[in-house]
Length: 378
Image (cartoon, rainbow, N blue to C red; front, side, top):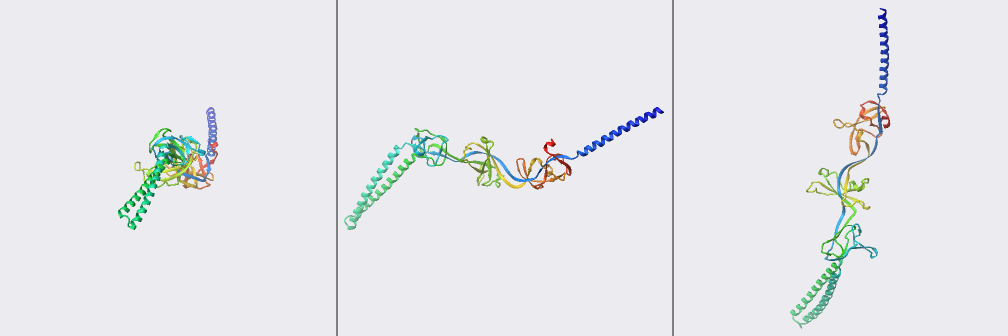
């Protein structure tokens, strides 16, 4: 009996000790758990800012004006040179800048000088003929009035005078044509621009209307855009645009919508819009592939937050969490304009509120939070 009692005593004591340790450990774990119940979050203050709604499109850079400089007269290309100040000349080559009215080429003048001389001589001869006819007319009309000649004789000299006058007019027209041909045998640029192509070399024969060089005005460039019909009411003239090309990947060029064509393209049924850009630096060249960002809406002084902090939206409404007195509050929001990773909040948030920007996935409404830095969370 003594042995049984002693055994029972030790078992009871051992059990008590184990229970004591278990109880202490359990309460210690609960206290630790209670202390760690606050969810660590990172926050930011809601501020106002500017935001744009954009549309990404593509197109090709084109020169604003492209003119094929042709010859209005036929002949041999005597020279193909630009005449500079001081009558200096340089060969007309691709890449050279030209001014409106600047000489580019000369067609052999000999034929046109001869035609001009012949026309001038013809005018002088017709002027002499007309003077003689007028004097004869005056004499015969005077005799007719005195009854010395018949009416038939008078009519003959009047007709001869009129024919002489017509011959003089024709001679003067031929002289003007000869002057035009001589003038047109000197080819000048019709616009300010840059020679982008040369089609013939000096010494070759050229026909009327055959191109000599192509001149393009690339100080102003344009990009044609094709938009779906549903955007017809959204795109307007003077809307801001940003251009990017592969040659300058890190640079954006500011431009604007110059015009929106009043009719849709009959083949593609798209809205045609023309973008123009001041290209004084001549960085953009015709033929470049352009990525166009069209700013369809722009707002200033509105609530802007990162898209990543917004939850929900697939089934339920969009919502975020704000912190009020150490408590996370679920706040439903209405989204407006979106731009890349940023969103405008139309309703649900105000400037100055404390917004949870990290750790929101572990929150529920009225959860106690501990505001920490992002480094602390990691």
